[in-house]
Length: 118
Image (cartoon, rainbow, N blue to C red; front, side, top):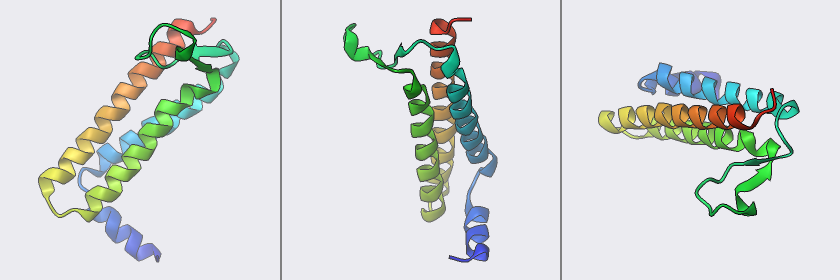
């Protein structure tokens, strides 16, 4: 795949700024999660949907998991938005990506601030 083809595909992407913002926020949150390893306890409660047992706890490095999943979903949505023809679906994918990134950002920062040892 040559560089012109990639640039042409990127130009087809609707609401490029939303996708870029979503990718940027996910990458920044991954970096923050990695840097916060020094202030986080060895295990953190990440899976709040599970019963209040040891199953909620994971190693602190897993704080980057929600951001990594958000990044993968955003990239998948961007590729899908390039491939589909419906303009409404393209915009829906863009807004879904930014919504997922926003919710992941809120959740991750809330976990970090609640359990970190400042």
